Amino acid sequence: MESFLSTANDALNTLNGYLWGWPMIIMLVGTHLFLTLRLRFPQRYIFRAIGLSVKRDHGAAGDVSQFSALATGLAATIGTGNIIGVATAVVHGGPGAVFWCWVTGLLGIATKYGEALLAVKYRVVADEDGQMRGGPMYAIARGMKCRWLANVFAAFTFLASFGIGCMVQSNAISTTAADGFGIAPQWTGLTLAVLVAAVIFFGVKGIARVCEKIVPFMAIFYVAGCLLLMFVNADYILPALRCIVSEAFSTQAVEGGAAGSAIMLAMRFGVARGLFSNEAGMGSAPIVAAAAKTRNPVRQALVSSTSVFWDTVVICALTGIVLVSTSLAPNGIVADTSDTLTKQAFGQLPWTVAGFNVGEAMLSVAIFIFAFTTILGWSYYGEKALEYLCGRHSYMARIAYRTLIIVGSFFGANWAIDLVWNFGDTANALMALPNLICLIALSGVIVQETRHYLWEGNLEEEEAEDPNP
Image 1 (tube, rainbow, N blue to C red):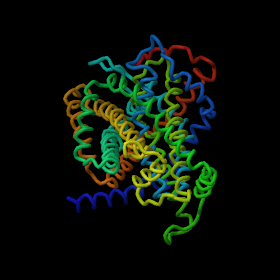
Image 2: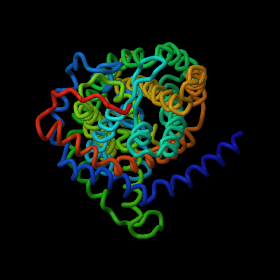
Image 3: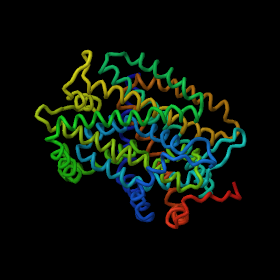
Image 4: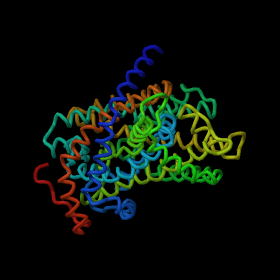
């Protein structure tokens, strides 16, 4: 079994070398930049969008409130990508990877805006349960009239929900629990499986209720931990920022490689982890954005775009600065694995309670809650993708899928971390491709809707009913 897993890991690593090469980097960052320019820098509306995110759009069609949809989307994005994912980027791509992760997030605000707009624009009401269904698969099928590509996206989303959405998260929890508290992975996996089962069988409303209560508190809790670490290493914050920027453009050869390999590694891991963290361009969050109670597509698009701001521009940036600054301190950390790097970094807080280091305890709690809510959010994405593929005959498929997610939560906790992360990277790339094609193809629709509702000041207007649902 170990030989098989090792072979699979090597194969996925090789495949990711191609998937996350220059073509994907150019396509992903290029789409971010293209939409940023064509939409006249929608990043400038971020604070207005934050204001909308805490308001209820009373009387609007949808299954959950705008804030609940945002919280569920944040639950799926604010996870191990913000902590271990950033550490993985630093370990493999150097400090410069933090810069590219941050740039990907800043530009990705425009892409997340466009994804959510299309999701609401082309959403439908399911005949059997009256719930809203939407996302890139519906935008591709109804907007591009390309059903086969919609099926491809849905299939990759289904697969990705087991990688990025389930096994990566449970693996991070079990690793942290084992290192911090000596808990065996099988017990962590069993506990997590029970907790996941207790929530996901209640559907989107149950998931949204849990996420909207947990996510804001957990984000504040984690940010507070980062700020404490930055205070402890305050003298090394500016050197860390200089190191991050300079290493992002370093052309120094790596381990005898060709000149320029350092910047390629920094970009590859920075962009990959940026996508893993904020999912802008992947097409996942629009699936739950389509369920929001909103009067027109642009309102929810603005709300959804704030998730990238909180996830990458704030939380990932803080994580990156903490990791690099603690490595520059006199008692600096030296680690060759992502979980060791984060543990040593947070372990530098000079306080203990009941024999446990405060920083390591905060990290363990943050990873558990972030990863748990990510599993919940992604279980919804995968289920909606499966419903799209199965159509009206989806009830038993939903039950089977939820069971597999629960089982995956257990087994993911017991697998090797490199294999799990490589599988997540592969699924992310394959899922992003059809979504990026859709965003470019329907960019004219995004501009048209934005012009009417936002640029012409009609943001309070109800969307006209679609005559061709």
